[in-house]
Picture 1: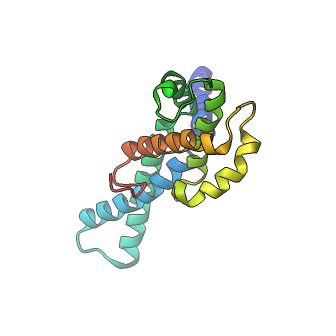
Picture 2 (picture 1 turned 180 degrees about the vertical axis):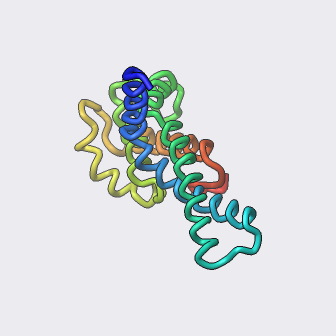
Picture 3 (picture 1 turned 90 degrees about the vertical axis):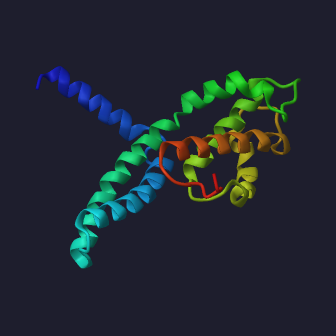
Amino acid sequence: MSNQTYIERDAVKKEVSEHPVATGAGAVAGGVAGGLLGSAAAGAAVGGLTGPAGAVIGAVVGAVAGAVAGNRAGHALDPAHEDAYWRDNFSARPYVDTTKTYDDYGPAYRYGVDSYSRYPDRGIDEIEGELSRGWDTVKGNSRLQWEHAKHATRDAWQRASDTVERAIPGDSDRDGK
């Protein structure tokens, strides 16, 4: 392998390891999906093998499947892509005050995506109080008070949840979809 190949491989590994969701929502959702898939695959592969041997095989297959699913989910939720999406689409949302700009709503969208990444195993209704208390520290120059920002935050959270769910099998956010 040439030095250039090593450098390219290391750059890709660094990008994957530094992706903000690959260690958050993607890792959690991938681990859950991988565990389920691994158990099913191990059971199908070895038939009636149970006990420690079946558990070990299930854990190995689950870890591999979880890593693949987590990586897919992590890359599905790219903060730069989400920012571009909301910049292009925010003005059509029903809660948007037309006297405000994307600079007002952008921090709320980022807050929704970031919060989903931090709390992938909790619902937004469950943590809205925490989000409300944290809004003033993350809003930057946004002119929105929480009562208006929460709609954009919730919207971005739901889009993030749906994006991750499409990247992995099952109902990872437990919303029945």
